[in-house]
Image (cartoon, rainbow, N blue to C red; front, side, top):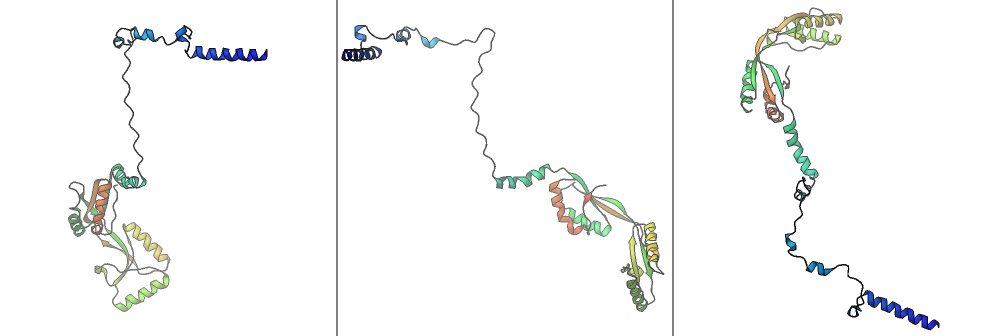
Length: 239
């Protein structure tokens, strides 16, 4: 009995397999084809079919072009090489000036500044202010001068030579105004200095001021070539 059941199960499985795979289609035994290929063959001019937008709607936009790949990141060396150029163009321009120069200094500066771009600089008239000095002298001879130097060293007072018109003598300090020179004299008197006085070493004189109205990074670099003609004066922001 058990053998009969097993045989029937085998026959049933084999029959189902043959039916599901369409092996019994010639006997009219096969599963229904869901693709219905006969309908595809019955279509007339399928290439005429067009999709229309809904009423009142807009046609679909054309597909967007593919995005370009992002640029490759710059190397560290390229960034370092580009940095000075960017800084040169981004640094704001400012007004710079130097002075005051006397006539001889202004002539030398004018020749040196001729190498700068035309219209980028000018020499403007200015007044070279007078200078005042705390002075000792004139001494009658070199012995008196040496004796006074020794006294000042003992008092701890610094000194130097005055201009040629006040030789032989000693300068104990130079000042931009007479009032400042008088205060300096009072300070020296408190240290024990005697026989010193305030004199005007130089009168007000006409002079010149160098001005760069629009000095950008490029012009500032070019102005470095004027260093020898600036007579020790530095370029600084305009007042």
